[in-house]
Image (cartoon, rainbow, N blue to C red; front, side, top):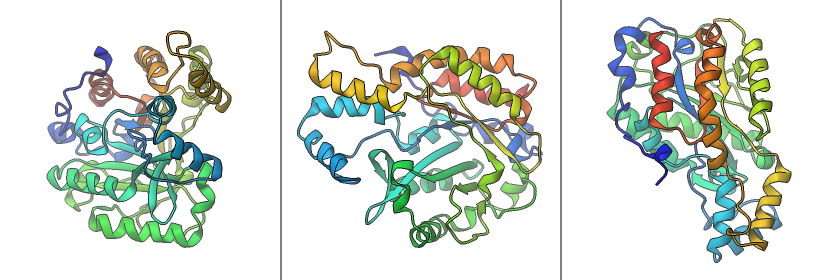
Length: 321
């Protein structure tokens, strides 16, 4: 087994509680937290049929072809652990992409996990760990954005309210401190990135969430993109800044890899995968953070694929500097 993916998943389970003296008076948007990108994409559900006719046909075929499942998973799965285990690992920011096909489904083009199960995992963790808080960013999975209508968006908001209730932090002009959230029994700051929804008092404005994205698998290109991201970070009390520390393949590379993987055995063609490109990205993250250390104080979230214990520790330790 690759040592990069060995975990001691309870080591940072209560890292905020353990650092309460350091964090107590810090506004939540100035606490540095590990975030998982496409947090729901730790599994692919081949028993769930969503999407257009082509996607449904691929899902149906893959259900009976393990080799096709493997090739799809290479590009769908951005995480290794369930939501509950991610939280136990130390993750405190979740990036959830959703769609609606008779029920809410977490997806990354292909179906991943039912949203009801994810919410259950989140609630279970927070009930047990009452001094831990989360920032949750929800957005429609782009390819299925049309399924998230005004009616369905409001249905989602009511589902969130029913599930989390008083755990949700009401929107204010500036961010509460960690201590203020604990005092009021709040554990979640939630963003839902859609303008096509009623105003809910717990839905923080996504216009104040800086969360850039770049589509490349080239490390040097990504370094330049990150330089730009750090340079445009705004120092404002109502802004939440999240930096995306991920390589992401363009669609043409994904399509090429899946086709080649079906045509050739892996002894001949070894495809690129999200896990393999994450290895390279992880290696440069310490240098990237050190290069931009003057801007770190304005950044809350650091979003990664396949986080490791060492990477979680690196981000948590920024709060002590």
